[in-house]
Length: 210
Image 1: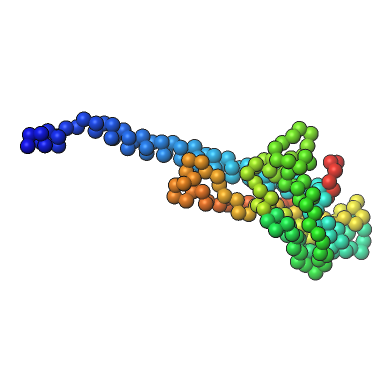
Image 2 (image 1 turned 180 degrees about the horizontal axis):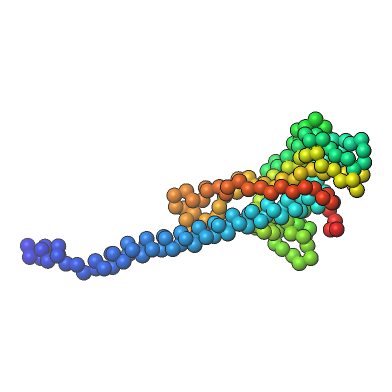
């Protein structure tokens, strides 16, 4: 009986048990903060990738070359009416769908899309002397995540005889945060990035550097 009483009152090892519980909570919080900081970095990098993609699209040949025939104009350098065309080029399907009164269907040009996605060198990873693409800023980005939209908004350049001046919007779809320490905890690996997009006005609309 005395042995049982002594066993009940014995506190040997209590500090170890308490430390084990505390260290688990401490590590979870510490690594969680690290992972959340990394998630913020990913969001910032993806935002920069969208901005770079829009800029690259504005000075590159359009993914759907038929844009140059959509919305014909009577006066050289004149405007193309709003609503003439709206091309949505989806990287997940490698197609460009068009709506509008002057749509001209055309093929998806993979090389033009890849220039926007991967830059002049055609590969992810910045290379000196080459204009960067989207995946140069966010390496986890996949072509299927990219959507490029060309819309007629009534713009025109007097110095361009027959060029189309679309508003170009680059956005991302189905991009999840990539967690390392929290990936298997509470469904963190299925958290989708908030929608982000960048819109610019088409400029040179050519492949070569100015």
